[in-house]
Length: 398
Image 1 (cartoon, rainbow, N blue to C red):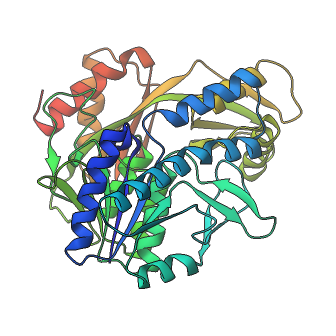
Image 2: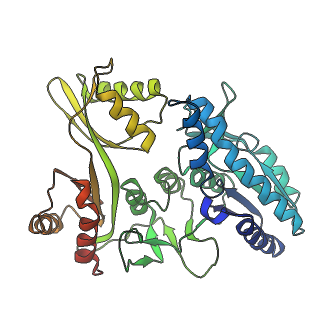
Image 3: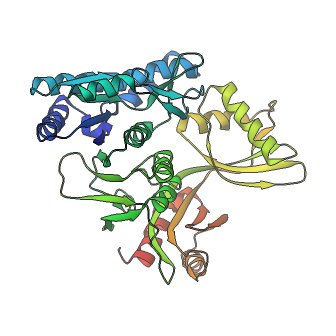
């Protein structure tokens, strides 16, 4: 059993879809049992979001889920049509048809169970099963839900775990996981193997190659993951579950969040502050943000967070006026630049990094140390320069 997931850019046109269908058909012909998870074609999800916001400045999250899931339905149907055209028996299913059961949180649901009865039957019949990623259904209210941006990765991992697949392949427009974003850093290192827990850390701190929730799920369920190119098989990165140990601290990658916002939330505890923030996002009909850091003060809490553009814009607008949740903006947005690796808090890497940034006159507003990461919060105008500086110093590439 093999589970493959194809990203949106690799499905951008009918030509792309037919090329992948031909490849999948050949695998099926060789005797492989296959589940293929697909994202929406190209930039169609972004286009659907734009359309929604042309209709209303604050579209309801339920209706956004209804709208956005159509993108994956187009991809799955076209892929199944193409496979059958190549003489490969295939059938497509939505998330609900495939038995992907989720929580009730629109736009950011979590998978709670998998009951893929129709998928199992189709596989027994020798068909390739094509699934719409990113979506499921809440069993209590029978509502269509989505798993958040990048949620198709999570769909693939969940299916691979359920069927005990030999491999779950996340196939994209990249040929593996690199030491930095190739769009921001030249001559990055590409890794043939990486430990899953470290990749989860990298994705949490900004690596866009995988959705961090999908890697966390793969790590907890021991799903073997491979990240590679949708167009060829030569290169890629295998995620392994054993931890790589080093005698000395070692940096593996430099990643970044382009926007980190800093809010004051009136509250007596961090739990209350988070609940107030969550309630605010619910009322604003936007997905909840990703919390990066928090501090408890006497009568309020400070939260540093990131998220998609819709969430950050809505929270910024809310914080400019008095509101019932006590959310106010503390400072202008920053960005984060993170070193991910092993032994980072035990050696001299923090001193080295801070010295480099001080020498280059990069203002570090805050830093955060964790077992596998050192994160620096800096002005956005210094982001690209800082990524390059730290990558050059710790990974030996300009």
